[in-house]
Amino acid sequence: MSKKKTMNFETKAIRTQMERTPYQEHSNPLFLTSSFVFEDADEMRAAFAGEKKRNIYSRFTNPNTSEFVEKLCELEGAEAGYAFSTGMAAIFSTFACLLNSGDHIVSSRSVFGSTHSMFMKYLPKWQITTSYFKVNEPDSIEDLIQPNTKILYAETPTNPAVDILDLSYLSEIASKHDLILIIDNCFATPYLQAPIDYGADLVLHSATKLIDGQGRVLGGAVVGRADLVEEIYLFSRNTGPALSPFNAWILSKSLETLHVRVDRHCENALKLAQFLEQHESVAKVRYPFLKSHPQYEVAKRQMKKGGNIVAFEVKGGLEKGRSLLNSIKLASLSANLGDSRTIVTHPASTTHSKLEESDRLEVGITDGLIRVSVGLEHIDDIINDIDQALRNE
Ligand SMILES: Cc1ncc(COP(=O)(O)O)c(C=O)c1O
Image (cartoon, rainbow, N blue to C red; front, top):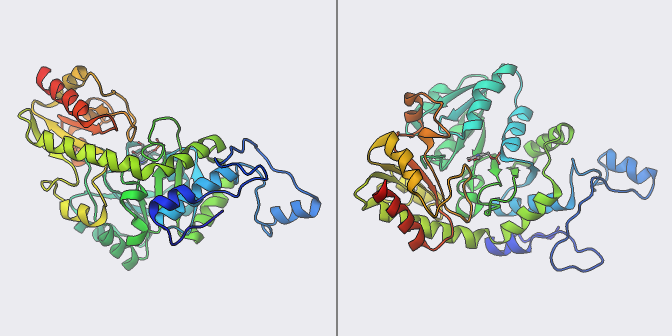
């Protein structure tokens, strides 16, 4: 694998690649093979003994997954990584590997729904418990730390209310209390934010979102400290959540254009947020790079741009939120985000409808909250669509 340590982000994303085969291909080939062959018994023995680093079986490593991981490590400034079939596989495997029965996690309450289910429903099966802090009350984190706390966890920006957590502050607390700091960097991508530079030990990704960027494949990854990643790798090699070579090939290609796509996503999102701030049917807009955002200063400090998610509060609550979706003509009504196609969702009546209102409010989901994953269509068309829906419903 060629390393490009001194190069810029864009060049690393394009030029980190696997060794060429004797065919001297320019575009990297796809290695659709479940296993790899050995010259003789001794080579096979050495590979299994870990004396020789080489591909054995694609549940462990494969040239395509290795290329994707190496590239992501270069972009995140990470020592090592491992790729998973989904973002949730990356999250679950990381926690399941690093924690023992009786351990405790301190996490931001504003985490992705399935991560919340993992904390509240599944990890307790192994006596692993989680205490939440509210995203706007980071001062409470230290009070939640117990002698058995092992991990401090957060997403920033959060889904769907795009709150921002201060990475330097989280890192300070984690090192003071000897906790492993894990950040889900899915909404920012390594192009906008590098949590490892602020002291994160591990960074998690759902590559399904902006890294793929075109809504085609699922994928996930963990990158960060080599000692922790080695443990996660050995755990995963035995438990089987590996990314498929085909999806890795797609995702590695996708990383080549991440910077160009995310620049345009952010440009469109900022324009939409500014438009919505002036709109008579909109009560409030949340976008990290709007001055009105409560953590605007932190966002400016740790993010290059504001990301592609705009959340806004339509006047009229639950009913208006729901009916707004019926008036959308161009954007898609879909559960995904980070796609080239703009996607509009109403969390209170869909993804978060099973939560009590008070629980929804804790994570910033008011009845009229609309989440827009701003795509790459012409911004005038995106604005016109949302404007006509706001006027028509
Ligand atoms: C912040 C965040 N983390 C993790 C995930 C899970 O990723 P996946 O759907 O690839 O399992 C999601 C999915 O939406 C997400 O938004």
